[in-house]
Amino acid sequence: MSNSHNMYKKIFLVTYSCPI
Image 1 (cartoon, one colour):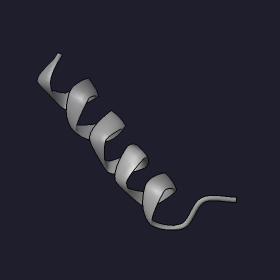
Image 2 (cartoon, one colour; image 1 turned 90 degrees about the vertical axis):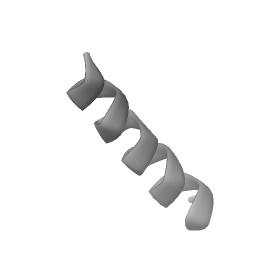
Image 3 (cartoon, rainbow, N blue to C red; image 1 turned 45 degrees about the vertical axis):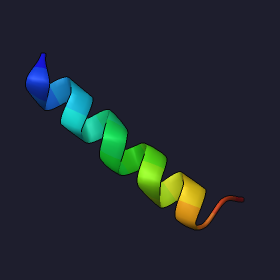
Image 4 (cartoon, helix red, strand yellow; image 1 turned 180 degrees about the vertical axis):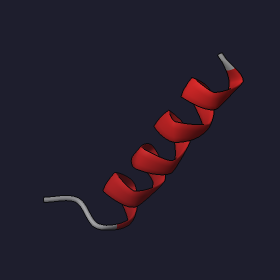
């Protein structure tokens, strides 16, 4: 569960940092 959350957080950060 923790791992899934970590991955989602990273993706969210990257998407927010440089959205399409």
